[in-house]
Image (cartoon, rainbow, N blue to C red; front, side, top):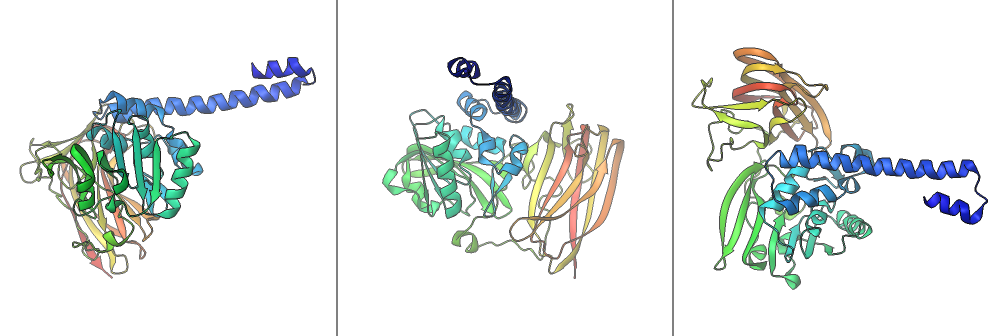
Length: 411
């Protein structure tokens, strides 16, 4: 329509110019439509399907353009339920984690919210569409500056950001109705307790570097009342707080935590020590060892059914890892893509979290009673961390796993 008006007013545009304008407009519309469709699918398949029901949160997730918060080369993956690198050894949290943390604090339109760990600015943008004011702090200066520019450019004008130590809070704007912490300390920093309004809520991942859980805190009579939620894994923090942890990971002795899947301290039906669990349950039906095994079930090809665990590993001293795991399958069928198979996969990362190797430990399909898989996997010399993923992933059927162990082989 705009092209026709210009043509009528000037009478100088030739047909080819008009065609170019229409083609450009059409391409832009298609791109916008493509991202809109991807956002709707993300909300339906990833967020609602995993139990998020808060309408304000769902509307925000369907509105905020996540592709604007990732690097250009990763835009095609912006609406996948994965964390993506944003530089400075940091990541943008997966869509589900952002939605989960946002729903957990139960935000209201009149709220003033403090976010610790701005990162790309995506979490702040989601909050911006729901609450009155957002204050966000990022310890990495380059990320703080780029996030501020991005949020201003996109019109999230009720977000105020700054570079600094988030664990000190933002006293001049306190008290806050809600606080979201997107990095993982060993315990709740006292300034955040002081700056949380009476009756306010805070969600924060707490724990050792590779063994964290979300906690929901509510301030009552000046003290925090806690509720332990699901396991999670946030990348290690940048700064002195990370280096001064009392409990440091033992990268020279990597191990699987809760590899028999027996432990569930908060009785939420999920095995402790394993994070980003999708379509899992603790199964008492004839486990291989102990009282339970971990069951993965999926009836829709392409939907995630998985569980992950992180661990430190020092490739300078560890030459290889011996793996063993028991599995039982029922009608397991691979999905449409090469990634949609039932299996156990390991990824290695270096000191700045670049992937330096990955191996499929075992693949499963069909119907089989309990079978043990064993494998020895070389560890890259520059590996410092690893992530293990087990499950159906995008395949269908039922998979039970039990007694998952690793043993290091010294160089």
